[in-house]
Amino acid sequence: MEEVRRQLKETPGIMTREVKPDYQRCVAIVTDAALKEMVLPGCLAVVMPVTVGLIFRALGKGVVVVVVVVVVVVVVVVVAAVAAVTAVTAVTAVAADSCSEYFYGTNNTHTCSPFHSVR
Image 1 (cartoon, rainbow, N blue to C red):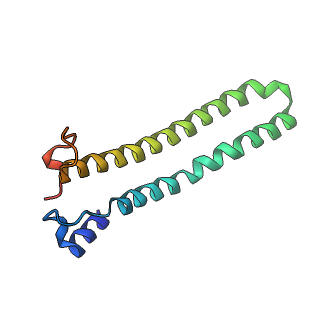
Image 2: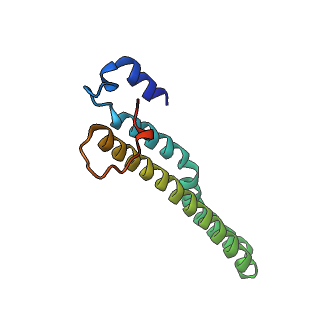
């Protein structure tokens, strides 16, 4: 929101449709934030198999089933988190693109409602 406000303040031609806003900057901000959020899940995905291997070696085969169940649950949670952040980033980029097409009239399908345009 700060970036949008900054662009509107610094470039008054955006409101009159004389100048296009810098969509790439907004998408870059969202993408950078999403990547920062994915550092911990990414580290978990790398560290967990090594940890499980060390646990199997130390504890033997008796505890393997319990450890496998725990690892599967952790991996499912990590994959779900990665998928959610990826989906949010993709939806944000598509929404920005759709709104820009509607706002500047380059697309006749009007995929974005007038309420989403900057006025």
